Length: 317
Image 1: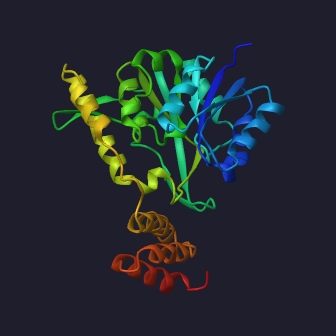
Image 2 (image 1 turned 180 degrees about the horizontal axis):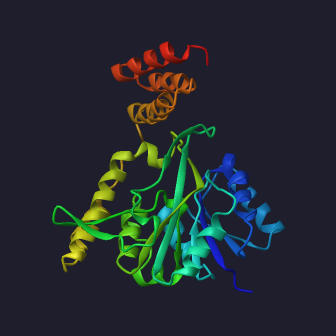
């Protein structure tokens, strides 16, 4: 029987989070689903956890591959999707109850929709609430997201998180799917291309929760990710102007991160979590500022924020 939704998730050394993440998908009520788990060369015991789920639940498909990176893992997973709708799920995050049924209902109701997202709660490593992503609000009802700002093509709204999205398999295939050149911004590149073939809706419900992990590639290679995101936007502008996006794609192909993040990069990731918690008046911010200083002690801004948090919230952990 063909499932209603194919959920695609790439895994690389995510063992501590897998059970919570997978359970949040398999417990979704409503549409029939398959969960495609692409093990991208894990070495930390993730493979054994994935094999256990595949053995005990026929909805789970395990796809092992050598370590090729997230984007190529997603390309492999999406190519195997049997359903007309593909939902993304990131390892370490959770889909909240009702996510798949709500997003499927939106796509069922409007055939012009190419993709649908929802509000996302951004959280720390221990599920400390940081902030809620709602998008711009323009797509609270289905819209054509392609617009212009200052004479340049842009998106009026976009998905709130990579893992929060469900898209039509037909629209994904029509765009050519994920492109390996945008290996740290593959989502931004795909959103721009999906916007060119259909409409977008962002459901006004917090149906997805994402963890911010200081050791993740998103945290430790933030500058390269931002540069690739700008190239994805540039490729979109070129296409909208009737030109080839080959120059932007070639530049993305040649852009590579440093071999290893340095202490300042890790400190910045801890600082980001700490500052979000401080603004929420959460005393746990103090611990993250201290972790940031352990990686980069000569950071005046971090010392200042630590003092502010300690004075306002109390120094005990």
